[in-house]
Amino acid sequence: MKILLVEDEKRMSEALCEILRQEKYDTDAFADGISGLDAARSGIYDLLILDVMLPGINGFEIARTVRKEGVQAPILMLTARADTDDKVSGLDSGADDYLTKPFETKELLARVRALLRRNNMQKTDDTGNLVSGDLKLDRSRSMLINTENGMDVRLSEKELHILEIFLANEGTIIGKEQLAVKIWGFDNEAEYNNVEVYISFTRKKLQFLASMMEIKAVRGLGYELRKKE
Image 1: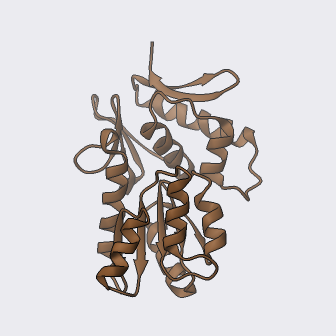
Image 2 (image 1 turned 135 degrees about the vertical axis):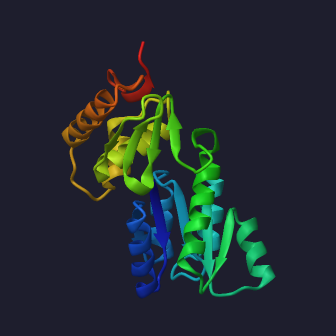
């Protein structure tokens, strides 16, 4: 899963990035509202974590703007103020949840899991693992599991992110450019052949598991996860 963090306090941002990345969330961080809004508008993120007080544009305005522009990713607001009016403002701007600083790491991660699970409700099991066909993705262990024969295989970081995208979007054609941006980011110089290489690696993992699912190339459009014909 890809997370956007917009937090201007450097130490807080670094700590949160470390926490999220340890949990295998691909996390991008920005320190001001204008850059954060530009990133949020991209539509490549599965979750937005926004501090309220930011230079340039505050978190409420970011949430309000991206909702008007059709961004559907869940939004978690962070603030040092616990006033009811502040929480109401955040929720009215389009946020899905609200967390008051200081907070415990386990509470943050629980809120993150809940929002991501809610966003992929039809694609997850009771523990929040992404599922599709005979496949289950155990993010905590970076494992892909065939639920029918019990086989499992370890995934690299990039394979994990690729499978998150496909399992959450079964039957949807995903373009190479979209994959490149979701996995490597806007500023990375990764080329399309990088996508092809990691798609090949991921296909081999599916073959090893003897899965009923396959990643099929759709000529001129991209790739699609679907059941074998």
